[in-house]
Image (cartoon, rainbow, N blue to C red):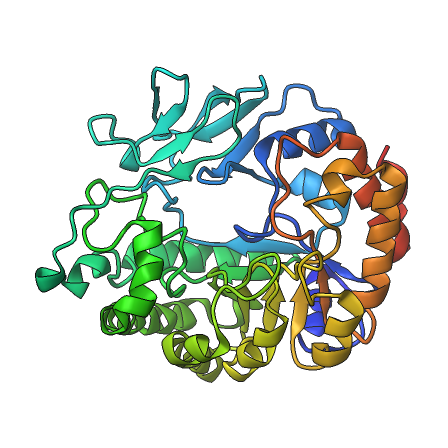
Length: 430
């Protein structure tokens, strides 16, 4: 019988495991909306007074506390920067908040919001209500979208340095804090550990608008950034060159402080696929992104035992060989609902060379709109296919939304997992 850390480490080495490894909540792309975590926790543990913490306010992701993690048989915990997407910390006190649907949660102390005339919720960078809001949650919604602040672009004076304001050496105090948490988890628990590496995701469109900054400069509009990858490649390369310098410095500091206490390293969340095809040509990926991915992965593999994790949504089948060649060890979210992403094909063609982390159930159709029986059948099928010949961590296809998934389907998913793993916890899930 393996413990969770042994299970994850063997999985990442493509070695046999006693049962499939499972992650929920260890990264910002393998979590669950706070409302869904609330309903799941109430159903499994029955603590009516418990308030789930919103640990990632941009997507409003809820925390899987240790009691819930143990009840569900989860194997992986995450370590990341305490600074959130809106520039305030998530470790300096908590206060009550109520979601639009009435769900009571806890939010970070500087989670400060206002409302507009439509009733939309506006969130302010660094919790500063005097600063322009940088995120909007539509009335009745469940997560934030960035509010774009794009200054007029003067082509003759466009300066890549303006897009590099956020790329600076990681605060030594944050390095020490992350390393301390990794040490604590390594010594006090048996979970596998995933470490998030700040500043290593090149061109992640969620980060381009810099919602944590009060007055960002440079190219910050989403459409304008994508135009820049074609019309201003020298500009984009200049931004990426500067980002790479600080990314490598961050890796060096975390490698020295964390050492072998982490197992996986979340590197990139840049999406390269859409539902029906690639979002970028293979040639453009090779020219614009691959050299930077290779440099980051090379440094990580030279200095640490960490396996590197890339998150890229959509139909990325034809890019998977490029990801492997760039040095990535793990692919997420494994969007089996996208064109060319059939699980058997993925496992047959790439299962020896990359770990699939995700793909366990379709969050576009099956989980929110299927029956519990359909959820259980798909989970069992995906575990059988993707878990064959080793190298698989179960998670859904991206984060579970908190508004559109019936609690019965969440329970069905975890019952199916417990059954597939031969776990006694199946009896704990109603």
